[in-house]
Image (tube, rainbow, N blue to C red; front, side):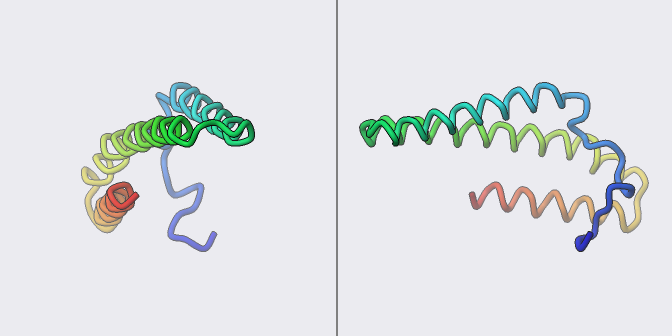
Amino acid sequence: MTDDHTATDHAAPGYSDDKVAVLKRLKRIEGQVRGLTRMVEDDTYCIDVLTQVSATTKALEAVALKLLDEHLAHCVVNAARAGGAEADLKVKEASQAIARLVRS
């Protein structure tokens, strides 16, 4: 891999305990996106499409916040307990992820 991560240098993701719930949410969002496609194909009124885009965006944001919460509660906390460079890296990653979410 070209980034700083490999499949072997991380424990299970923080969301592992809630993986089924996260996948269920993502499948629901996938259905919302398919619905948006149908709305556009069917020439649905712009405001109605925009309303659904907003709902889909909020659903994705909720998933992102859930993943971020789990990352902080598990990955960052565990790295902070261990200390050292790994702790610094996890805090930096979390900060960057938060910045991306705020900008989106």
